[in-house]
Length: 87
Image 1 (cartoon, rainbow, N blue to C red):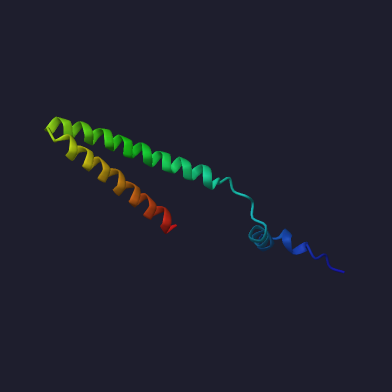
Image 2 (cartoon, rainbow, N blue to C red):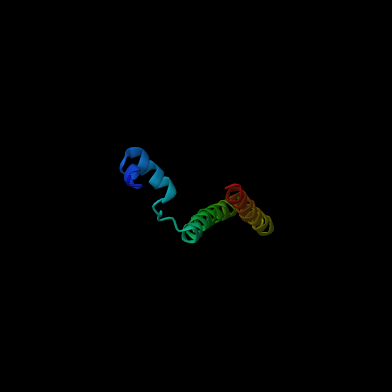
C-alpha cells in the first residue's frame, strides 16, 4: 500500500501544504490601525500648529484662523476615512 503523505515531500507538495496550512503572520490589525491613526493625528497636529503660526504672522483675524483650522481637520479626517474604507 502506498503512503498517502509521500506527495508532500516534493516541491509541489510543499506548495500545496503552504496553501492549505499557511503560517500565521504577525499582523495585529487593531494595534496597527491605532498606530496609523496616531501618525495621521501627529501630522495633522503639526500642520495645525504650522498654519496657526503662519496666520498669526500675516495678521489674519482670530475667527478666520479658527474657521480655517476646523476646515483643515475635517478635510484631513475625511480623506483618511476614504482611504481606510477603500481597502
